[in-house]
Image (tube, each protein chain N blue to C red):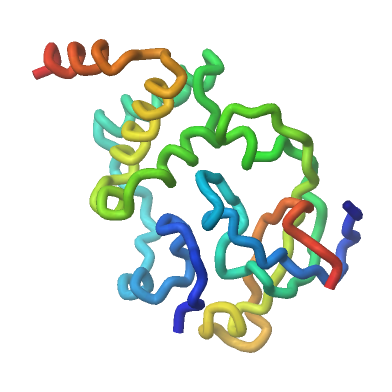
Length: 103
Length: 94
């Protein structure tokens, strides 16, 4: 029986709908994408452009539908993007241009 | 705000900043309003609730607090405990 409280969707400890599957304790295999995202986070922290707390806040503000669908590091890159736009480190136009070049 | 000694009985504030706007809270929903026991003081850290928004952050004491697991999660054996790191401003004497 879950407590009827206004918890945020990321605050899922002990919530019955997430207790159906056993916890997988083995380390996950990291993809190149995962490593790139982790490296980017470290560079941004070193340059004082984003704290780990800002990263977490950004992850927690991803709408629930996307939050549950996205992989761990896809949540990270979404939050990193949100933080860099908020701080004006990159602009929407620069981001759009870079994404276009990447295709 | 008082300091808590190891063994002190504490209650986690039954507060829900989530209902008041954007926030970053490190206190899990399942311990709010619950009574626990201080294991030890882990040190003093800048308040992540402010760091999350790039605001100036005051230094706050962080405690390891033990809770009775069966009464919180309705699973586990008698004597099982959950350890949670909780900042001082979320704790009050029980």
